[in-house]
Length: 139
Figure (spheres, one colour):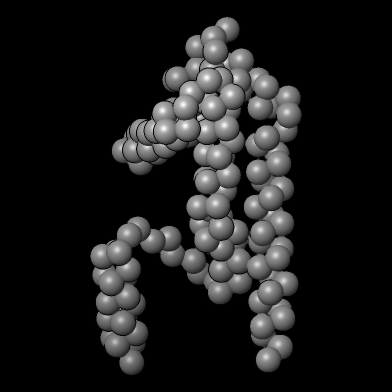
């Protein structure tokens, strides 16, 4: 049975790798954490992209150009993050010039508590996941 167990997990990993990357969790209880970060994550990205697109439109770009600039910027940054072994903070620092436009935006984000708000939102998603798990587990 141990051989079957090991082979079974090996097969599961191969199947999952064929459709994308995976993160192994050791406890079922961590599933709410995965859901809060990754399962709900696309909505967080779209939310950020919506804000960027709205800002671009408010700066005078037509809707098509605003969307293109926003999405292409995100894709380029995501590709760089995927291909780099450097931390995300190092990558951010490398594209932030002291006294420049990027630094001005990041200082504003910090002053408005954007990072903390994102973290609080993800914690709220995790808590809601636990609540839903408790509700569904009662059946």
